[in-house]
Amino acid sequence: MRPANLKTRIFLDGGNPDDTKDIIRLLGFLDGQTTNPTLISKNPDLRERIERGEKFTGKEILGFYRQVVRKISALIPEGSVSVEVYADRSTRAEEMQEQGEEMFSWIPNAHIKFPSAMEGLRAAEQAVKRGLRINMTLCFTQEQAAAVHAATRGAKKGDVFVSPFIGRLDDRGENGMDLIYNIIKMYEKGEGHVEVLTASVRNIDHLLYALKLGSDIISSPFDILKQWADQGLPIPGDNYVYDSKNLKRIPYREIDLYQKWQDYDIRHELTDQGMDRFSADWNALIKK
Ligand code: E4P
Image (cartoon, rainbow, N blue to C red):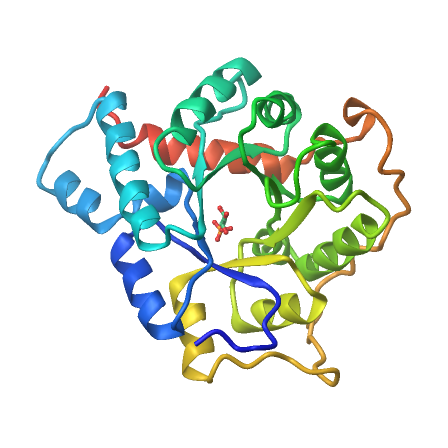
């Protein structure tokens, strides 16, 4: 059962509807799910077919993604399901936008993921105007989050998520959780239409500290949600202290949220590398 004092929405990060079922049973609730090309490429049914030697066209793989997303959506009809567009470094906003429109029609509760890069933001700006709900993924800096806020002004709360990837920052020695703290603090001066979705969660302390910080949403892999359920779904109190070990601090920066989104410094190498990885995992599924 959902703890009465739990304010944060809890999402599963994964591409297997069987895990969705299991996590609903373990937690007693689930508010949504995030998927991405890498997670879909790890779907066990797909792996089995690939190991049997099956090959897929781009259209077939997209059809598989749609099937998976529909199964997940039916399990959490009141929740949100994030579906990610294909984007490599050369994908233009118009192509992302077109894919996004199509994916949005797959299920009634989709959020479309665009990368927090120039073309992704361009697509996002148009997408919200056309009534799409979106999730800006691969966010690694406060500036990128400020640009998301600026590019989507006028959107309704609940329609725009920003996904800071904490684990990938930790992986390279930076304290990813600082980014969650910094974005939440910066957004206090904003319009409140962008919700912070803590992503790339690697351990239960990420989850607990994100709860303590009041992240709007946390998307967590199956094993960490299971661990949380096994511990009785604890919500950290005032005396909870996050141990950032010897990770390097990411200092807070005063950033004006009301510039043109194009004026923020939104480039980040992990965003580019993230797009490289997602697109490579996707392309590996398609027969040449
Ligand atoms: C969720 O929306 C993200 O795609 C996911 O959390 C990324 O996690 P990773 O850094 O473990 O790949």
